[in-house]
Length: 307
Image (cartoon, rainbow, N blue to C red; front, side):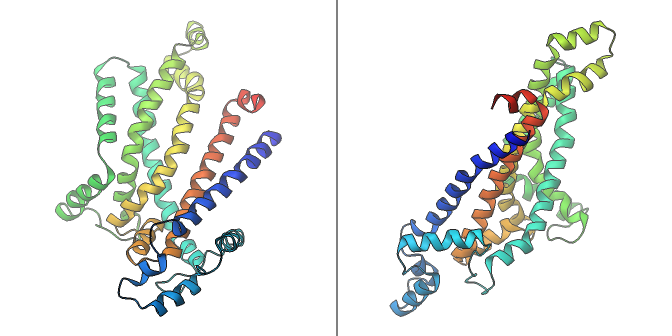
């Protein structure tokens, strides 16, 4: 297992370098002059030149790239143009809120998806199966930028049960977490059903049933674990989607996370902060995929032996 872990970590290094390179290109290869875009069309050439010098845009591109990588390695992502605070400090301050929302959304998705997928697989072809899959299809079809405002109108404005936005109490977390977790739950429920149906038809499950093992035990203790690998794949891949979806959801509910910071920075043309937020989201996505890959090896030893 240790060799497998080291091998996967080494393979991640080129990916992280590529991610950092793409984020660097975000500010340098977009059309127009970033300094001019920040200051607006009415800025004088002297102001533009001063800002370019402040951002280091007047240096050769190779030098800028080397300085950027060196800063990333040492945790220096530059200084915000909006409030003159270090970008890394702002991101660190916002990370707990985004992490809390992401894990809450994943918890909501799993609490809905796993029972729904298991029930649909066990009662395949019945009205329970059709109802569960219809519900999951509705969840996939509804985008979070529509579901979020709808839930805010119903449960906050009309009923007054939950706060419409902000943070500070568990009640503030309910609507954003459900908004983010609903579409993910729909995808996971369908994947759980399909994977579990495949395992239930395997000979070892049929043999267990023939030996007198109850249906519940055959499903939960025999088939379910082996059916989790595709589900873990979706969870890992969709965690990145949860982070990117949090950009919209945090804005809708005024949740003080990295997604809202990113939107605010785009509005103020704060390119260093935008660059830092995008870099963090990308690196987190790569890290989650690595964790997913390592989980494969834990669930199925054949994977780590074969690689």
